[in-house]
Length: 316
Image (tube, rainbow, N blue to C red; front, side, top):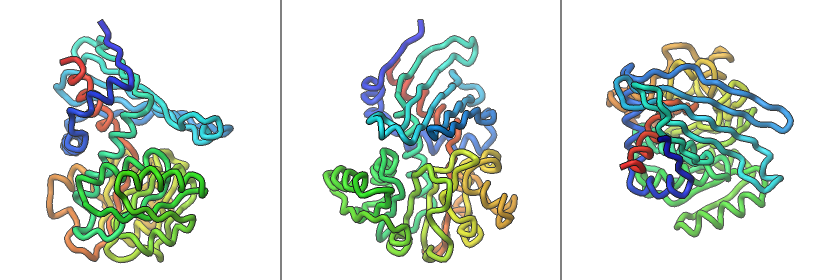
């Protein structure tokens, strides 16, 4: 019989899990060719602006496969409802039976994305982080910072947002968790003060430019998960010493690498895959002066790992 679990049950199960480790192991398996991930299915909407993704796949020889449906509608705040929602479907790999429906309302997508940001920072960020920069004062902007706790003890943060109201809300929320939050509407203020930057917005035009990026900066770009979105000036990727893709295949059709390829400033072979970086120390940051970029477009292996971990915890 198919088991259906709601968000409260899912959040309780997560307390017993280590999402960062699960996502890290997933990236390694993906880069080793152990994972089957077809191209992303998506719908893009203009009025109001939004997108819906279907991501799905399986680890060869594993117990289950996963289909994830997630959407983001970026004017939902006007209706006082969340921007994101979704669910995860867990099937038995050998029979096709629907084992579980995880009604996570988009929460597991947020968790696996924040965990991936922590993985990227673990291997790519400078050892000495003086200040963290966050672009995006929404849920993901908060979760990225929360998941970085396991990577760095830095508590000084500069946050960019689209309006003062959302920045004030962010500041109140995160200062209650012990962070020192400076808010700004000027993107240059983030670049000039921070050497670990996370971009978590649905922007369709660059927020950061190459001549503003200091040596020694690491940027994890997570917002650009469709062909239309673009948070970084492509010249940043040309300037970078190391460029990392969560999926070299997927980043050829979406994300910051796609934008740089389209602009003719980056070429195949100029970037490596995150799973390879995790496995090979020589591909990781080698000095405090390097500029490094991680382009995280969101790969189905993340959904597979987090869904199966939660499903096993709930059904045990």
